[in-house]
Image (cartoon, rainbow over all chains, first blue to last red; front, side, top):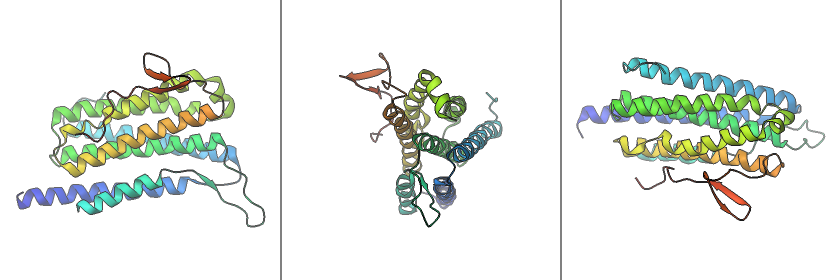
Length: 71
Length: 185
């Protein structure tokens, strides 16, 4: 592996590890529920919708950056 | 580096567990309802699905994934997310879940089947990145199956799936996993 490839790999691994830790925190915090089941479900629903919107945006931006058409 | 990524994967697997309720210190907290647990597991699907989007995009941008594969995987990823966006509002209450049981079952089975195609890991050159994607895909499928089991336990879904998508043994039917990405890469 060349030094340039090693640097790229290190950057990629660091990015993946950071995302995983952030996601762990999101999951952990969302699992701590208050006393009202209805409010809990509403909060989980809202957070889920927000994350899915992030995901669509991430894919579409990635495709745009790659010169691929949006779908 | 490889050890750090592996530890991250193990931590991620350990986190995919049950929600819990905070007590007020004087009386024991009420148990978490099936509907809350279903929504919590559904949120976890969203989190892992987003992680796949970011990981695959980062892999492509770092040169570890060919453009043609990024095109295919991102299309599938967007499709899966749109399916999940249809599923989430159907889980908002006990009555909504029971009134849409067949559609929920169909959407969950689609997520289980599609989880194996999210990470076409053979297209990713780097072994650590490939394993990360396989882990995420397996977790998405596992969480969708957990929701199916919860709804079966609550009597909302009588059977997990219908042939020909199913392999049934007596009354226990599971989604066929012919295309599921396993450990053999």
